[in-house]
Amino acid sequence: MELLLVAVLVVLLIGGLVWWRRDSAARQARTLADARADAQRWYERLGGQVMNLHGDDPAVRQALVDAGERYNAAGGQLEQARSVEQYRLARETALEGLAYIRAARTALGIDPGPELPPLAAAQGAGQLTRERQVDVQGQTFKAGPQPGQDTPYYYPGGRYQGRPVPAGWYSTPWWKTALGAGAGVVGGLLIADALFSPAFADPGYGYDAGYQEGFGDGAGYGDQSGEGVEGGDVGAADPGAAGGDFGGGDFGGGDFGGGGDF
Image 1 (cartoon, rainbow, N blue to C red):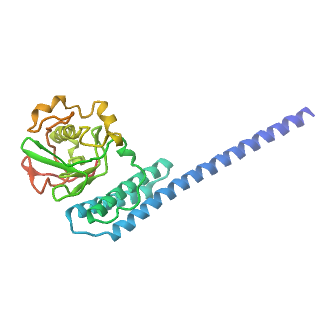
Image 2: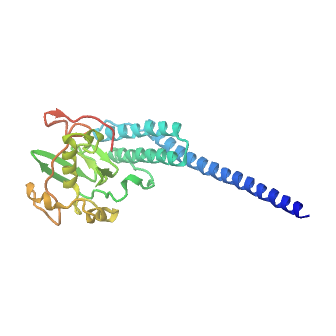
Image 3: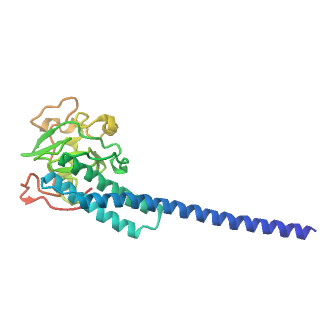
């Protein structure tokens, strides 16, 4: 009798273990399928926009080029994805591409479309709320909340060398990864310092928190600018190399090089 009871218990334990493993595998498969479907949905939406939008304005063309790059990158990530995290990365890339699509639609003067889920990389970076111009070592850098002839490069917000870069339109894409080596890093960091001002971005988007952590402290650069410091504004910074031409011009004796976005 005791042996029978032990046998029953063993069978129940084995049965429970088998059921638990199957249920766990089924849940993991459902989670993976959901992540894949979510990433695919944003990817296909991005593809439709990339194919259908056209424009001759420099800001429109540049935003569509950036969106197309994200579309190709997201497609490659989806093909290689085998885990939930990899599908989430593909989703993030597709969402970044759609952020550029919204920028292109804004530059075209049409409805940018529905709001997108927030980008993980842009959390705490802030958003430009007014036009800004800084002169740094004889070079002029411009930025603002709207596209313009002098600000054709959109950036959805993110971080450069660990420092927040607000979302907005810039005169040159200095955050490109071409700045990842040599003197470009120094120049890019100094440009970033010029942008780290509470008045330059909207604190309501979390930018103020980044400033409080030490980003954008103007004490070291306030005397380097032709502009005065107002409310913590930094008036000067050192330009770095960029991923595209700065206003169609050269810097440091060479054209700004290419490179992937930050």
